[in-house]
Length: 308
Image (cartoon, rainbow, N blue to C red; front, side, top):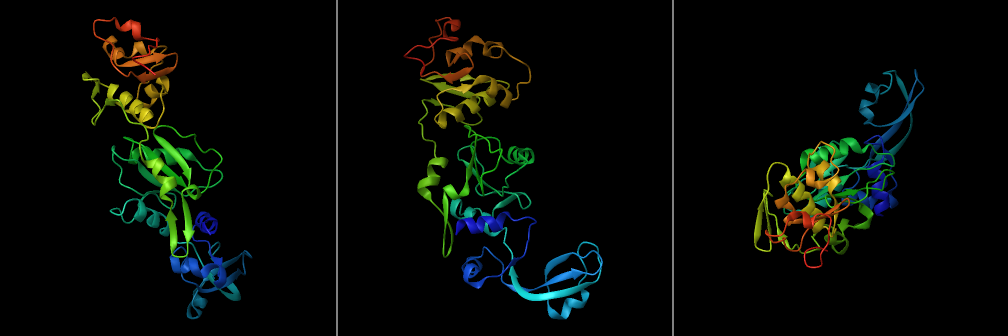
């Protein structure tokens, strides 16, 4: 049942008319996924010879012209048709994820919706109306413009060809993995969805907003310039269960534009009391090195009591 709804929801162009089958579609009309059936006729253009279904009342047929060229039309057989209600799916999901948000917030018309409030303390949830070949650039731009301060879960109506691998900050998840259809409507499966929304790993350090102070084992490190952005991203990686993260990738996401061969080119020695690196990886220590120990000892080395 859910596959049918997703198929209708993804049809292009938006508003495509579907021949109404009472036995197969009545339950979806009642649930609100489809519009009410309406009288429909094929309009056959005398000029360009196109043939398109049009919902029209009998008293208005003489006003109908070809939507492609504007030519006069002849009408074919009469039948009933419906179309997908694009607002139904995001609003139904939003009501289950965040009852205070109604309706869902449209970020890209007919393409991308936010289903929950976006805060740094929670995972923001979105719905993406996807296709096999999807241009991700405008999608990511809209997501970053809407919320770039915490974790994001993007539910996609279907998998697509260039679907990104999940990261600590952003996960793309097919809708049919966490939802199913019932006679009264779509239902989210809490057992499948909640693990995507809850931090599974307890953190051994504190880095609260605005992320400018890292507290580890009772010691606090003030963060300056772009350091809060870097540490925030590293925190997200740890909260998502990643023991390590690529410091090069974190630098790029934090806004560092130069090319660096070592993290020591970016952070002063004092910071390395709180973080550890090995090749391309970085992580936050279990405890800071004592200030009397030269910070260089910690760069690129691993000790059992201070790192993973």
